Length: 257
Image (tube, rainbow, N blue to C red; front, side, top):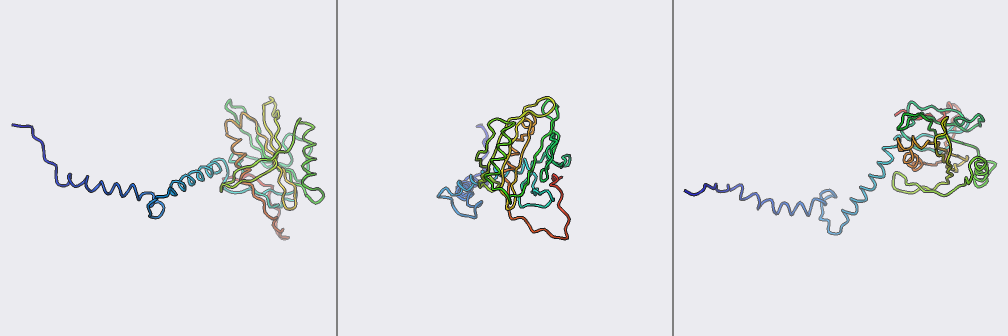
């Protein structure tokens, strides 16, 4: 007696015949289903898909590193001046908003900082802070202000000068700013750090946004990426008219969410 070999069922015979044209249909039409039904013969789907991936990746950098809400920059009277940005998430409920610059005895009106203590990979804690300098531009043009700031910085940091820099915004556009970078020594144990100053010309103010970031903390918490993302969210608008009956805005306390 020969080896028993069951005959395929009618269903088994039909399935490949049904699947073959269906598979071809899916291969041709799956991209168009995602793009509202139409066979992508021109490669536009792939192009749009890659653009969408790139855009999503760009937005992810901002969403991972920054608070979703904006923080307004305020003047000495605690009034918003029409400049805002999204701050890094490290500035959370454990941060403090202080007058002036941490570690500096000389205080000036219109200068305040948001400060946060962070550890590094060895458990050592250092201050990380962002400082806002907000001064009226009534008596000095932007070029003169930048020159005076650079002159003052050169007294402590050799070679300090302004340079043009560009950052990508969340919507894929580009924002151009003036930046001054300096390598510094921070803290009680002379930890290498870096300071960056950005100049922003607001409608009625000169604005400096300065970041002080020790390198060990930057490496652990990816602060270099966070700072660049934050500057990419910078927006400048007309300063809102003050309501005589309103209370002054707080000095830009860090978001808590």
